[in-house]
Image (cartoon, rainbow, N blue to C red; front, side, top):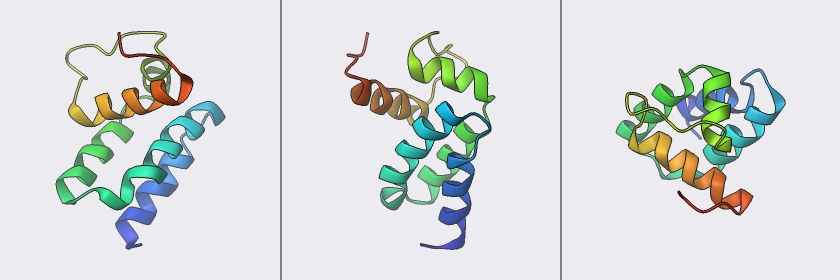
Length: 89
């Protein structure tokens, strides 16, 4: 794994809260090998989002606001909900 991917993976697994580490880290672990440069850029943009907001969006506690919705964030939300057995609503 190249240095950028290792850095992103570390960042995804060490968000600050254990629950978000598991959700974000799990998604990144599973998908990072498939991402091209644009995908890595999009992933880094999601990782820049505030931890409490990201956790709420991933768990469905709050809907993702239109201004934050990106294909990468949507993929992460869908991945998380599928693992939790929740259908997209």
